[in-house]
Image (cartoon, rainbow, N blue to C red; front, side):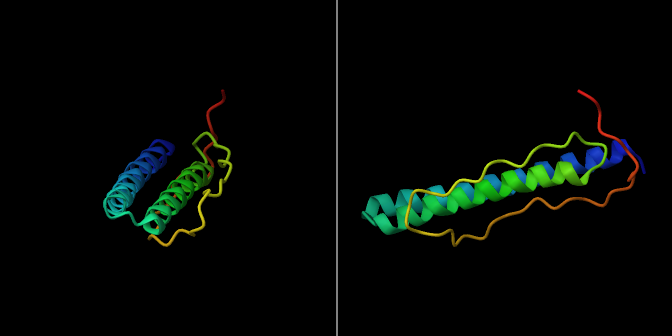
Length: 111
């Protein structure tokens, strides 16, 4: 395999990871909307905390993925933020898993 295949596999991992991100966030938005209808502020806070946890983890995973692929441009990890709610995330947090690297001696493109 080649550097091009490694980069292609990384893009596939990002694509499937962000599809999982969208699915997870949509589920939390639906839960928040239902909680809003019933006036359950605790569940709304929980949904907000879950969305924050989901998006923060996926951003960190995407940065880690580019660092794991030698032929990719390394992206600095994002700053982490803490939700401004009392709840801690309790949702299943999706992840972006780095694919197997086949060109370990590849070098990132220069800016």
